[in-house]
Amino acid sequence: MTILARILKEKENEVQQLLQNTPASNEGLKIRPSLFDALYQNERLQIIAEMKRASPSKGLINEGANPVVQASIYEKAGAACISVLTDTPFFKGTFADLKAVAEAVQIPLLCKDFMIHEVQIDQAKASGASVILLIVAALPGERLQVLYKYAIESKLEILVEVHNVDELQQALKLDAKLIGVNNRDLKTFEVDLARTAEISANFPFHEERVLISESGMQTVEDAEVVTKFGASAILVGETLMRSGEVAQTIADFKVKKGVEPR
Ligand SMILES: O=P(O)(O)OC[C@@H](O)[C@@H](O)c1c[nH]c2ccccc12
Image (cartoon, rainbow, N blue to C red; front, side):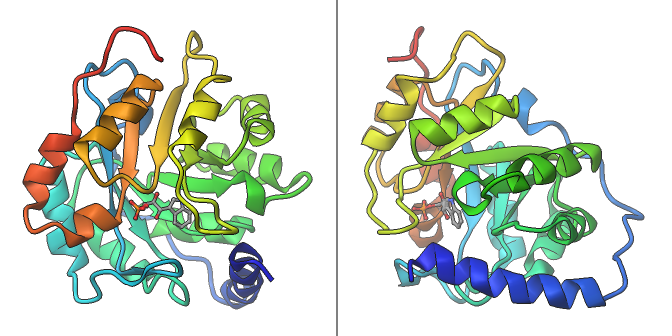
């Protein structure tokens, strides 16, 4: 079984648990600025900075990190958005992390999990997220469209994650505004920035949409490469979680964009 298949199996159990609990309240939630607005036509590459303790591909990354401290540094350093992994079995994140970060920061907040059911979207929203991730490869048939619509109705922004041109077409069919290309193959864990190149070659840059390059960003050169491919933002986890100078690393990643993609 691929890792993605294993994760999705686990999510089915989580959904059953969630469905047995009383729905969480949305009272007292902050209104956050739009992530799309922060990214669209910005003259610099923007950073979605991730709170990531561990991952199936890397094992422990920074187990002891305090999510509030980490996220506050990200915000102060000029990140456009904070991403918090909430999956526990594979990434050692929690919804408590997301809630704590939501209290501490004002910028857009992404709940990073493997969504397969509406109840997870409710939970993300109730925990303070303003953006959710939908992974095309995890949502066969109508599920992608159903969850996308549900998230829109819930007044959330949606980052649609794709791995290839076929999945890009599906994202465009939804009219997704925030499209992320994961440079890491969720089946093999291999990272290749050529994935961003491939999506870029097929991306309608003249439309009101943004391309986000996710995973495997280690150096300023990596950021420059994906900027040339037209990325408006990068999603960075591991490099920031391991950096001894987080603020400087974020500042360095915010490279100036060229005039035209590619
Ligand atoms: O730690 P990295 O290589 O900088 O990657 C961050 C982020 O892109 C990655 O965590 C991610 C991208 N898409 C996902 C989907 C599920 C879980 C995790 C992810």
